Image (cartoon, rainbow, N blue to C red; front, side, top):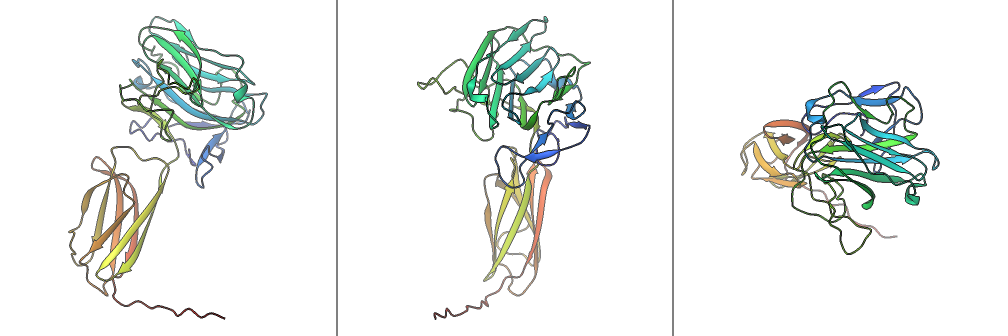
Length: 324
């Protein structure tokens, strides 16, 4: 969640810290990846204010990473009263999804040895309209029958890392995703940027479940992406490359703009596909400074930006290699 509890889905369902905002290393272990650290303090947790998007979901999926400080303790990871909940203990996993009639489909397993440690695990709660399914690290652990649409309880906020009537989860929580109805496209296991719900379809390996992606994220509390742009001078050209931490929306694009004499590619250059990480500007004027800006765009709105200043040149200095 990288230093904040903001929603990257575009729905602005941002989290709010209660108590002391604390962060720890996230589940990827990469620099800049941070998880919320709630660690067993009753006043230390995060909430997301009720929004109609959080209830009345036809076929929801709740995906989250969590790590316990003590293998023998756990707590409530995520909870929306009478709508959905994921809780873990020493070896136990319990969950429910509630429908509009007040019926709870409880998917529980009280003997999951795989979570009796202090490692990161991926928890997934999904409802496909007939079954509630709970998995950890891609392994289906429990199911329960349920029909109908998920309830919408307007007076209850979404709690992350705390039982509303009890203590906080003892550990760290990262990358919470709540998404809507599942599509039919399937993808094995959970990809790094999971937006999927498990189904009852199983692969040949009984330890792997099939995850079709959801059609839309409702809430995505994750690490905020950080963009770093680099530029290297060349003859009548600037070679750009960039890195970005965190996860970008799949529909985002890049836009490159520059200030300086026009080259082969008039500024701005739009519609560059999201996976792109390098681009070369050509036909530029040597010995002239160019200010180049890279923007990550969602529809027509920039949400990440970085700028470099580079002078194209045909003069390069090569130092001789001296061997002793």
